[in-house]
Amino acid sequence: MKQKTHLKYADIISITGISERTFRYRMVELKEKYKDSPELLFKKGHSWRIHVSLINEFNNKHTNKN
Image (tube, rainbow, N blue to C red):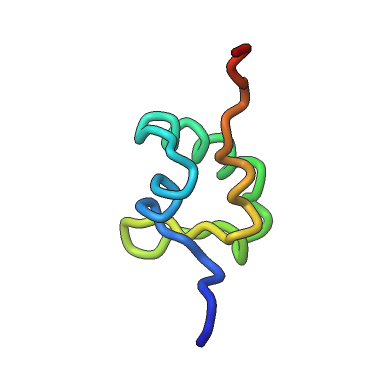
């Protein structure tokens, strides 16, 4: 059985637990950062395909103090 190499929006949201708004902000940053690497980040139709190696880019930037 093959494993997924690219994830969709819903996959990223369910794995990381971020909000839709946070996803959009991160995509703005990542589009600029990885514009020379279309194999890592590309748009197919109206949905983004994000390589699994970029999942850490969607983690929280700030952690709770508690």
